[in-house]
Image (cartoon, rainbow, N blue to C red):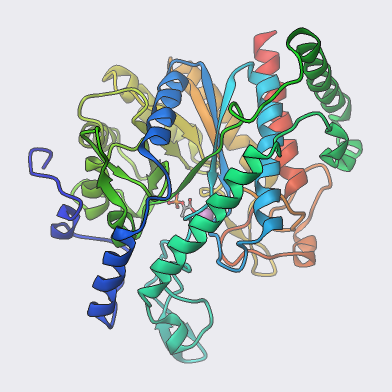
Length: 448
Ligand code: PEP
Ligand code: CO
């Protein structure tokens, strides 16, 4: 397989999961062509920079914080939503810097997280069966035939919304949004409710003192260049990814220029499948979700197909087993990766193995399960002679009520207060901050 010629279209010869048929193939081809002629959303220079940083993370010098919505919507492409997403990632990253004493690579699930894998192709309501909703890149959520029919123009709308999002993100960062001089804006009411409030206050105090100290030594901190954000999404809908996959002048490789960091989802990582075929040929750093059914041999094979030269900075294994499975599933995989000397960066996604239905039917996740899986991943990878190089969350900067637990003790009954997600439940602002604080505490105490 690896010896076969790769082209941006060679995935079309392989079996594909999560595929959709467009009723109008001409409009589909025209849209793909239109996107392929538009300017790229990110540049190869930024992608190469991320690869270098991820390579340094494999050596333990950086730590990855990846997070954002399960699925973005076009309606949520607003100033407030984008700002609050960046803000929560930024604040979490400062807390993690305090804990790890490492630089943080911030990767948002943003500007393209528009396509969702579904467990069922069709959905039935009151005796009517229609195609499942697959994210705004493909169809619309309303339960009508028209809305659920895949419309190729959604790909063009996806490109446009990703471009608008990135444009605003870049301006915010250039304009000094990432200024960390004002911890008083950090909205820390929840801290009083936590049994860890003393430790938390200590962390905030230390961050504030360090900023003051650095400024005395080095002058006012201009943090724009250092507070980079990268974007990422699941590379699920291959026509969209392919449309922006190009060679650029003076570089020999092909880049998927829709995003810096695309990943392969748990449902589309088959060794002989279309997604692995597409991803093996692009030069971006990439992720692969690794769930409980993954076998050690299969994982090694996958690392060889996706990273044949065993380069650092190329491949992140994003593990997502669930609190009940991580202790059993991760050790053999981690041991095999070490034994075979495969260069990878382990990132833990403690969200996707921990989803369950609450008594009222809403999909939820518990703060304690999420924390348990994360702490297990840290411990297991250390014990196997590797290390956890990053964490991956579904979160939002708003105070939604989608996950239970945390300092405020959200219960299943509280979920109805402000449950917004159309797909998976996210940690809210306070729960995300608290998660970062607990991890920072662990990292700091390991150093002591
Ligand atoms: C996701 O990250 O939203 C997702 C669908 O994850 P997974 O592929 O791990 O199930
Ligand atoms: Co999700």
